[in-house]
Image (cartoon, rainbow, N blue to C red; front, side):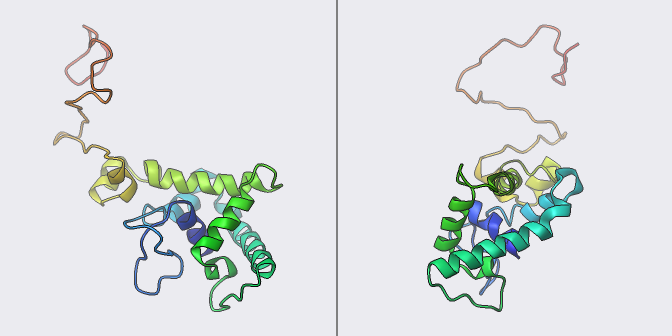
Length: 176
């Protein structure tokens, strides 16, 4: 819950169900949680999976300290970070990722993985992510592949052709 709440603070999304405490519902549509941030963070290839429990404990310690500083009473039915209102989660994350914070590398790393899940679906094959309605790829207008599974772009992303196709390029787009 704590790691997902952090991801939702980085890229907010709508609540997944009524009463969802992890996703604060601070933005419409799917955010980092719906994009699979937890799946990416727990993927062994990312290098953070073994530390997530420790990171969650540390985040809860910071949340408890933050709540005490601001005279907030937290619901003990959920972990302290999850119990924070979205504005307070955001303020705490801002503090933790500040250039002067001694643990900033941990919190920035967690934020980067949350963004990566949303922006690139790094943990899922692109065609599978698009077929499943991945919120980040759809939000940025990522094109789907053609029927043969290849990506072709009838319009130039810069609005004009930047270079001519090399004369030895094969019909599949590969250099000869």
